[in-house]
Image (cartoon, rainbow, N blue to C red; front, top):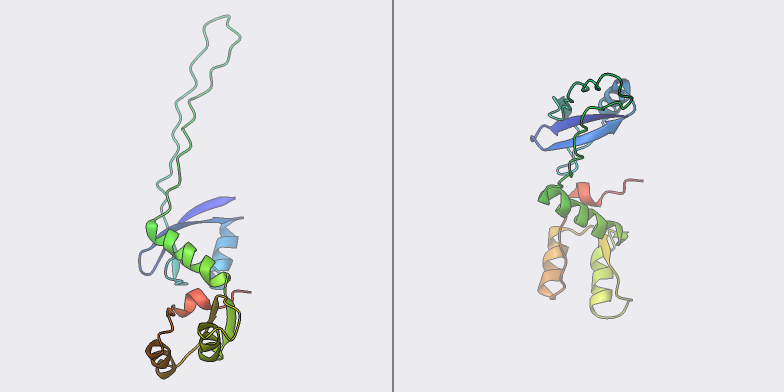
Length: 152
């Protein structure tokens, strides 16, 4: 596997793992690689700062049979940016909801007025329908399309 440092057009940095350089190029050209923060498909490789430099092996004392290996760098912890954690949480919440499509306003009302079982739903509503739901005291949240699209 090859690990590449990647960046989108909005300068969000992340890494990707690929079977080969050709595999990376094919996936990028087919817009299969997307920024995990903004869903941008304009992805470029960046030089990697992960350079491993080892010391030359120490020469064993004359007559000794022990071989001394170069020091191995400590594995570093991968930190996830807070934005990536929030995005992952939002995607998890979206995946745990039922997509009711254009029936969202009606389903939201049924759930609010206890005419349907309480459950997480998602779907579409016009701005007028959204205003009417707010006027009725029905809580909901608007999400960007890249979070709610079905990826299957």
